Every structure is written in C-alpha cells, then in structure tokens.
Image (cartoon, rainbow, N blue to C red):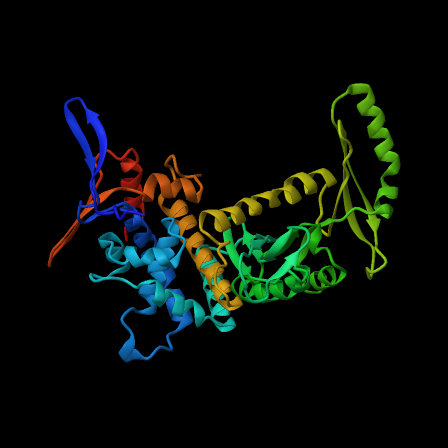
Length: 436
C-alpha cells in the first residue's frame, strides 16, 4: 500500500480554482466542544471524585500523568466518540484536549491507559460505584418522595479470549451480561456479570448495597424496584418485602396463570371477532407459585388482536387500579432500556476488549461516568434549547464536534471556533448556563 497520508489530494475544481486538501493545517481541532465537558466536569467534580476514589498506587517518581488527568482524558474521549485507547496516541497532541484536561503538554498514550485498565480490581469498581451514587444524591436539592429503581440486564458480545466469557444460547454468542440500575435518567450501578450466571441471582444483593446510602441520605423516601420477568424470583420478592421496598416486576406466563384468565380471553376473542379491532382488558387476582411463601397480587393485562391472544402479567405490592399500575408504572420501564442503549452504544459500554474481567468492568464504569457527564450537560446546560431532549449521539454531533483553530502562547489559549457552526447559539447558551 502506498504511503500517501502526507500528500495533497486533488478534489477537482470550483470554477477556475483547483481544490486541494492536505493534513497540514497545523493546530486545528475537530472537538472544540470539549470545553463544555470541562465546564460540566468542574461543576460536578466528577473526574476529580473518581480519581480520589481510585487512589494512586504508582511510584511517584515515575508518574507523568496524574490519575485525575488520565480519567478526564479517557472520559472526555468517550463523550467525543473516541472509543479505543489507541485513539489517544494521536489525541494526546490535540491542543484543545490538553486544555480541557488542564495540561499544556502531551497527554497520556495508549500504553498508559492499558496499564490503568490492567491494574483494575474489584475495590476500584466498588469505589467508582460510590462516585455514581454520590453524584446522584448531590443532584437533588431536597429529598424525593419516591425513587423507582429500574433494574435490567443486557449483553456485551465478546470476540476474543476474555476471562469468564461463556456462550449464551439466547444471544447465540459469547458474551457478558451486565446488570444496570437506573433512577430516571441517572445511572446508579453497572455491574459486569458472566453470562453463565442468572442475573437475578445477584440483584437482591445489589439492591441491598444501594439501599444503604439512599436511606442514609433520605430515610423517608419510598423506594420501588421495577424489573421484567427475568428478575421475578421468590428470594428477590421475600427480601424486598423484608427490607420494606415496594416492587412491580414482570411475571412469566404459565399454565396456571393462563387458566386464571381463560374465560376473560374467550370474551376478548368474541369482542375482537365482532369489532375487528384490538381488544384489551385489565384485571387482578391473588396468586402463589409452588416456590412462593405466600400469595401475592398479580395484575393481568389481556389483549387480543390479529395475532391472537397476548397476555401479560406483573406481580406488585403497590396500590392502585390494574390499568394504571400496568400502563403508567410498569410500562415506564421502557425508558431505562433507552438509557442502557445510550450508555452502551453512544458511549461504548459494549467494548469489552480487555482480556481481564476486572479491566472490562472498569471500561464499563468509565462509560457510566461519561454517561453521567453527558446527561448533566443536557440537564444543566441545554434546558430551554433545541437539544434539551437530544440523545448523547446527537449532542456530540451537533455541539461537541466543532472545528476550531487553537492559538496558545505563554499567557493565553485562544480556541477559534468555526464561525459558520449552525449551533453556536446553543453552545453559547450552554456555556453561560454552566458558568460558575
């Protein structure tokens, strides 16, 4: 392959003018919007708190990059769309990235980040989870009346010889099954799990760990756990009741549940045959599986349409009508699935490229910290703008990916952002809203 990266490329003509392009523009950057991330980070103290939580056991005489600068560089890179540590072999020379991190010399390279990931331990994961929790608590000026903890599991495909990687028949590949906990848009936990274990086997232990700081901060706040049928286990229900935690959890349909609603489904089928439009009905009854210690309230949502009967069941201890509990309470869990996609796809939470399991857990948590930074940019800086409801990928494309020239001398760093950028009014509004 010819070496042509330093050459000039011809792009035809515009009138009598020849169009040429070459990578010789000097100190021009494509991520001028990273300065907004710096301002959000300074307001939250996110990367500084993460650095303090991780500590630094490296030999001081050999350290060129502080833990704080390493985390800021890596997390900003994820927010800007740079998913791999090898990207930083070039980004380390980016002047606006250096400015955002708070340095005036080259930043860390890929080998430095690889050593950081290789040194990851379970204690580091616990410390970063504590940072996520403290960020969530600090974001509330007063105690909320109610918190709904959305619990869900997803999969991270593997394409190598990663530790504790197992084949999963449902996903038809080798993967991990990380467990996420959200409250609204805020992520409280992202625990990496091997795919040979049932995620429900650890959910009660995870909820218990989250309850301690939440109840310490807000002892009178009502806590509700919401999850799909994959987490409906007798032990989970018993422990939630023992800990005075309410729940609304999906229940896998079976022959006994189908018998309970058989007559209602026949009536729905007749109504559909008459009206030729989808029919829906809600009801409730007491139910106890053989492995349950007692009967519990079960909500049934019955539906009959062109594809036939489609029953759904949930188990809950919450008061309210069956329709309101299903439509307003349970179906709202779909928002957590959107947030998982944002963290995994837009912020690269699926890139488990390390061999060590704990290193991949660290990568998952770095994506979680990047997610926390981005939702706070949206929450604190973009309210009232056209990007107030935008997802991370849209914010990155329209607000962070701004071309700029950087002029740096001994007294000043000037970032000359593109004059014709369509979102400059949003950038200025966000910078003003985030100012100290």
